[in-house]
Image 1 (cartoon, rainbow, N blue to C red):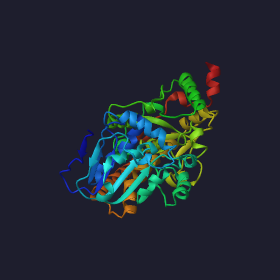
Image 2: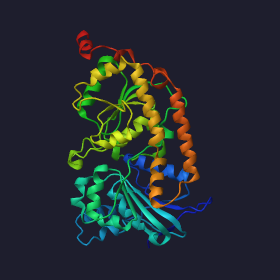
Image 3: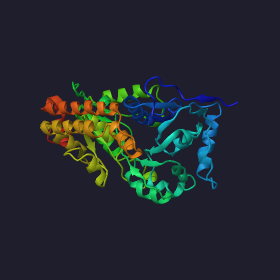
Image 4: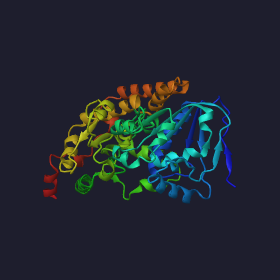
Length: 407
């Protein structure tokens, strides 16, 4: 017999938000930022976080359902429980709020029975759905129609998805726990010269390896494709990531899924690395996404220091930055302040609740005051040393080619 769970009690104020989470059984690295967003909401609002649990049959049923949902002409498979223990809601909520990383998370909510009867309104925020996927996924896209409000994290997907399901769609970009990532009020020493995490352009990586060999810079990068590996604890993973990022002078960035053209089909989107690198007060180096959305979200100068995708000017850009510590400092400070004022998860949740017809909570107002106070602290921290430290002498050379010839 399948076990039935009751939603966990919350002893404080009456919760107004019901939000499911797969954190207890989906522990892949790429989901850690997704759970971080949920954590911020639970900290600032009255939320019942429904932590779903898998039954012994989950692994088999989930794989079977994922394969069938793309070929299911009946449109029913997407509404089946993928082997999770059922949850019966026992109280009333103002909003049922679902945040999915991808479409693979959507069937999980079928484990919560009667959520439409217990929630006045409903919201689905799906972070990653590419426009090129929409024609291929017509057999399950109707799942979005069960929600009152729909948000997507990819700007280029808004119009195609709206046309496909004949519903208005809102764009809502990613974010970051800016309080976790910020180096303020006491910035640590930037002992790491360049930090690259996640997807990367291989040509740029090779140039950075060359720089590390020639000038002995401290370059930290992934040595395995770890996004699908499981973490012990998502909070510890984000803490570790933040600790490294805010001790890094330069932070590599590229548009979302830059190495997966087959999936994106050239759709250029703001990946989460931009929010994380900026919040850490690092100088971001790489390529900004094309289009107006990036300039809207990061309107300040030097938000990203550009380099060629083939890495041909990587060494020269590093040398140029090393010769101009004032520029490095200013860029770092603008990034840190901009993230505190615009890109914390609280701003995203506030936008969702506004569309859903809910007033911001007192916890949201309190967190925003804290973010604003830290941004003011950034403004008071004037000078290269405060923001980024002194660039290593090995970088302050007129030409890496000249250094190579000398060696």
